[in-house]
Length: 72
Image 1 (cartoon, rainbow, N blue to C red):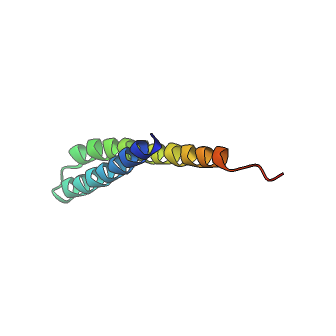
Image 2 (cartoon, rainbow, N blue to C red):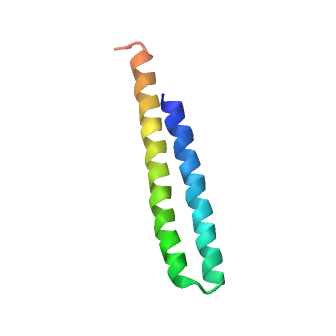
């Protein structure tokens, strides 16, 4: 289950980076208002992707810790 979350998170990170690149292209074309809208959306998508990756990593660590025998 956490693998699908991690894959989805990385896809969102890549989409966020693509949107940032698109925003930079708009700035290069002197379309600042359009660029600002796209950059704000890119930031939201990027942060959502990072959050999914963090949650998937935490789930993987918890599952691994439960499966290990207690040495104490």
